[in-house]
Image (cartoon, rainbow, N blue to C red; front, side, top):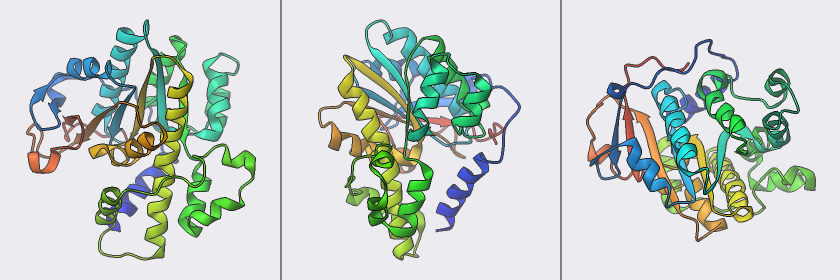
Length: 299
């Protein structure tokens, strides 16, 4: 429970903090790339593998400055390598679905950045960590998917369970995965409960269901893009818990689109850097990138 509360407080901090610096330079000494079983790899290996997939998941620690620089580097390479032949899109946990219209208006040059910032509810570390990717998409006229469920509806599930969503209007339900959204898998539930600790009650059960609403909504809107475009390639950003070990939103995607091919990259800082610990890191993704924990956090 304490660990989960720390993660929750981390998200709350995003609403109160706006960094002033630009995204840090990406230095080779600050990260190591591995395959899921611990073999040395490169960023080029990841972008090459992405060419055979529909969705590239980049799981992050939200305050990992090196991780965010890596995300930009990978997305930039994906755009340069595949834009001519694929329908490349950026998908983000960091924007809630009801802000899609605002995001589209900004990408299409209809509103100013000031109005975008005031109405799209970007996370407060957006200027430093996510803006470079959005601006690249904007410059290349690529879509950006606001993939997350609105937080107010996630909170409804935390307080009242899944039945709480049945009170929403048809208009509100358009911003969520269709009801009933998928149940968490046994493996994902076990992982979530281990994170929560020994205490388990109705509230923690609801938290798991609200977590699954995040997962399902992100998956649904990515799947929707896949179904509407020819040769799509989506680069999706989310907290690593949502996608590591191919659980969470990756499982939910395959419920909506069983034939979809997904590549999971888990990026995290680790005190054992630069060594890969198979017991700790093995299987967290198709690729695992460890980053230097000594680099100053984004916030």
